[in-house]
Image 1 (cartoon, one colour):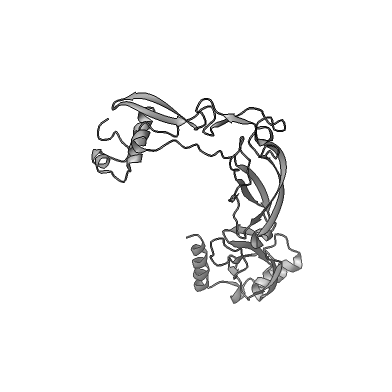
Image 2: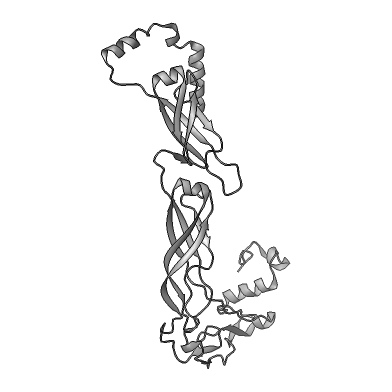
Length: 316
């Protein structure tokens, strides 16, 4: 096989151990020379024996829709979920009354079978999980009539769980043990809950921050005033300073969404825009025209540079 014949590097790693135990080495030989599932060609040398893996039911996946208001606070959900549950008549065993079993004739109740195989080291005893009883040591003699020997039944289950505040769109939460029960007994799978965020009609989510585009009229942007804006929890009133420019970002701290990792709550960012009318009456045109040559209606070079600097910073 050469120095690269074993995972993890050259021959030096193999002979020196390289972080590998003797069980790892024997297991590797078992894979190469026909070791059975759960067993090893060197089980006699290591003293190990194959172990039956416990059956596990399949996972269930559901999607739930959540508003920003629910995401901000967290919410308890109770849903009816169609799932496979353990048959109550046979306790999930598949045998009538849960007792109709007999000793497996293949392994004589041990759960393992032994065979002798030839390897480059000579004849080796190979132990593997019994294929007839799958390691249980017993077989069903009479099937449960309620589940036809499957050990599970279809049922709509009421499942309650908590969705913490601050979850993200597309995030998956795991509810342990609330998935399908396995056939023949074992442990249940999990319920995987996928979050689907409902878009807010006015607010835009950006991580833990939310953004609102505020449209001001020319008089308010020029002279100052106040404006009412929506928040996740209701509405708030902002003071608008005289001379507020388009593109200015106003920040309301702590009005965003909480974080699941303990970081500070996000903010609400108000993106200011100024409405420029496309149609004017003759009187409105005359009023604006009268201001055309007013010194304060024309920006100075310093004011231009200040505004351009802020705009450039937004695109960096």
